[in-house]
Length: 146
Image 1 (spheres, rainbow, N blue to C red):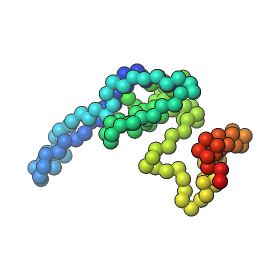
Image 2 (cartoon, rainbow, N blue to C red; image 1 turned 60 degrees about the vertical axis):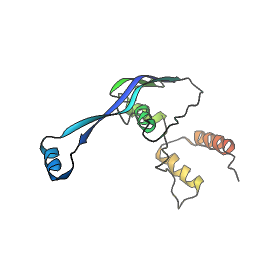
Image 3 (cartoon, rainbow, N blue to C red; image 1 turned 120 degrees about the vertical axis):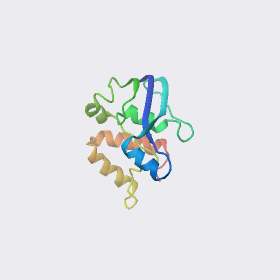
Image 4 (cartoon, helix red, strand yellow; image 1 turned 180 degrees about the horizontal axis):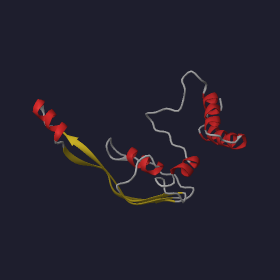
C-alpha cells in the first residue's frame, strides 16, 4: 500500500552573519546551509496495517507525512502510495486520502462534532452511505456514542 525507498528531503537555509554587515552581505551574497530533514528512509506498509511516526521535534515526522501526501517533493528517493506517485499524480491521489495534523484542527469549536463531520462530508463529497459507515466505525472504535 505504501512503499518508500531511500527517501531524502533537504532544505536550503540562508545563513546570516550577525549585525548590519551580515544583513547586507546576506542580501547580495547569501550563504547557504543544507538542512537534512529526512535522511535515506525506506519502509513498506501493507494493506490493512497501521503505522505511526514517533520521534522528537525535528526528527522529520511531519516532513515525511508531507512527502507521503504530495505536499513536499523528496530531494531523492521514490514514494508510492496505493499505486500513485503522490507528487506526480497529486490531483487524482488526494481524492483518496485524508490527513489530520495535530497542530491544525479540522474541527470548528462553535459546531458540535457531528455537525463538523457533516460539513466536511459535503466539502469532500463523501457519499452518504460511506459517511455513515465511517462514522459508525469511528463512533464504535473510539467509544464516543454517548
